[in-house]
Amino acid sequence: MTAPPAGIPDRDLVDRYDPFSPETMADPLPFYRALRDLDPVHYLPAYDTFAISRFDDVWNVLGDVSGTFVSSESSLPLPSTLRVHNEGPVPDPPTEPMGSANMFGSPVYEQFRHAQGRPLRPGAVRRLEGFLRERARTRLAELLRRERFDLAQDYGGHLAAGAVCHLMGLPLDTARDILEIVNSSTGTHRNAEGGLDKVTLFRRSMEVLVPAVARHRAGEPDAADDAVELRSAMIDGLLDMEFRGRRLTDEEVAVNLVCVFVGGTETVPKVTAHGLWELARDPAQLAAVRGDLAARVPVARDEFVRFCAPAQWFLRTVREPTEISGTPVRPGQRVMCLMGSAARDPREFTDPDVFRWDRREGREVSFGRGQHFCIGVHLAKLEVAVAAEEFLAAVSDYAIDEAGAVRHPSSFQWGWNRVPVRATAIGGAA
Amino acid sequence: MKIDVNWSLCDGNGFCVVEAPAFFDLDDDDQLVVLRDGFGPAERTEVDAAVRGCPKAALRVTD
Image (cartoon, rainbow over all chains, first blue to last red; front, side, top):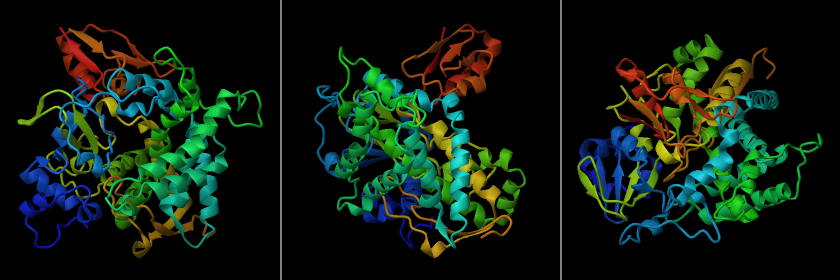
């Protein structure tokens, strides 16, 4: 799985690397190793983009908050966007109407991030732990009555989408719809050119989010009414925000919730399921984690993240002349930060392709760094730890149906979408 | 030497609190509180660890 395609020299892998090609989307890891070793700041002429694969370069570029690197063309552009080259720096988009603040530089990006981010901060997330554990336990009780289920979507996805409902003041029974919307629209293998089906994803997300925003503006849900779900502090934060002397419309608020809506749903299921699969592969490691779930699952969780995180890269567009490890980059050119490669760089991690639950080594790059550092990091980490801990606490024995597991080729979210498991409940109630 | 915070970037992630609790704390609203902004050479190591560890790159040291 991580071995290079048989007989292909590294130089050829470097030359053949294209983030949107079917062979790269099927398994990028052999390409990353060749890039790191032979051409760590690798120019892709078709896209006028430098693909950076070493840990230190990814760390330094993402962490450069000077305004040199901006997500002006989005962090995940389509290949068709990249095939059109810029003549110079790309300015911020228009603000009338206002689209996603993710494509803006400072201070606009930060204003929107702060307006919605309060419920995702560490203390607020800790207060969600009870809700997450209850949801995980209830779901496990149902799933363990089945002969088999999908660890990723039936279990992890139920938890992640449920948390998104909770954050956005949506009824919990909307979780299933959110999971379907995100899963059906983020598979890049369905798109002929290898990019996200952004149009469908956006449209279907807005169909859920715009009415939720409108209800909040109209005063519903009323927190005083126990029969109605609590209001979303994320939506209220954006409704209350004054932007260039005005308030935002329902659509403008909704478009700025799409990032958390999608990001909060798609990643945790894959990391949880793949991580539990890695433990199942090595009974000694599984036994070690089981030795003290409360203390050891959070440690293992960090290796789940490093080893299993599906997000392969984020793009930045350069605004000022700069250089990366001696390679000059001009305004308008792009830099593709390959976190999927950085997380497997032997310059940062010993034996990086080996899963070690207690690795406790190296810096964490899987949530990014700098201006766009993952806003959901605390919630994501808690969800993975709770999901894994509750699963291991409820189950005496489990086996992954490897032949039934599915990992779609993807230019972006390359991870295990479906991980069927047969599990025996403690007490043998299966 | 002094700690400088880019308040626009700071999200209250609290990594700095772990690295240098004598200098940083989060209040009940997850807002960063800088307990002391001046420090001496003996404290350089822990302050540097907090600066390096900030995932938002929101901290700097100035003279």
